[in-house]
Length: 332
Picture 1 (cartoon, rainbow, N blue to C red):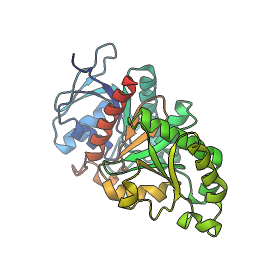
Picture 2 (cartoon, helix red, strand yellow):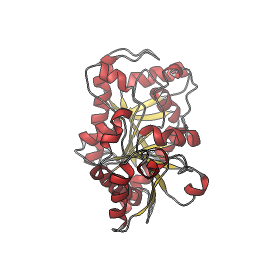
Picture 3 (tube, rainbow, N blue to C red):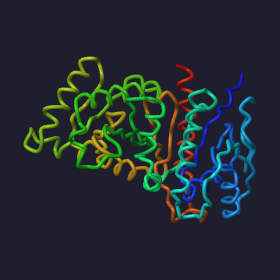
Picture 4 (tube, rainbow, N blue to C red):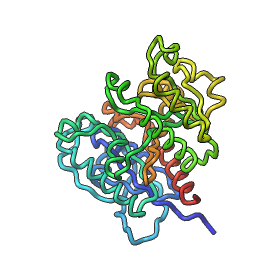
């Protein structure tokens, strides 16, 4: 009996950026998945015309069984833009539109209409300029699904990096590294690696916060007072945890060969290495949600919007990962 065709929601993200380009480019290949773009249909039609690519759409019929998409086709759940779109010029007037596309996607995932959600890149500053506090997809999805504990995981074929803190100023990181937070992140990461990625016994390498993992307390006491006791307590429960490991050595080939994921304490401790290894091929995965969510590893690239130079590699990987995680969850 053939595998059922999944229905995956796709939010293009910032309409003035490369998100619409990527959706149109992704649609050029026939797929055994029903991709449902949640957006304003004329936005994709206009971008396809700019890119001189064939494109047509059909409206989502939620009562129908999912079916594959032909080359040059997307299924669309329409949401109207609030202001005209000019490539490369984001408009805060469309901030509400952006959040409505996310809200419709989240509702569809939670109701079981969609097997998962793939998100295109947003411009956080533009949403905040509209007077709407917004720190990122990860935090928004957690709040919308009433999920306290989520973990941002970026993954390539060669490397996985998860974060204890995400989009916060560097000056606040130390105060946010608490024993309670670290324990919740490690439990969520451990469960997500098993339930979503099918890793039966995850091996997690935990970075120290300070240079040389604190150098025995001479360069900071977070390792001694918080990180080491937390790791010891969770090891006693059976979690396979290595660390705290100095961040300047945890990414060496010898160390990576014996771990499944590196847990970094803050955004720019781990993600520059991940993006150096696989920028344009990496996937952003939110672990801990009651729904499947993946995303691209890059921003809106306003200067490339409408040029035809946007690379779909990360979006392709995000789509494939969402399909795989949805299948993994269905088997659980």
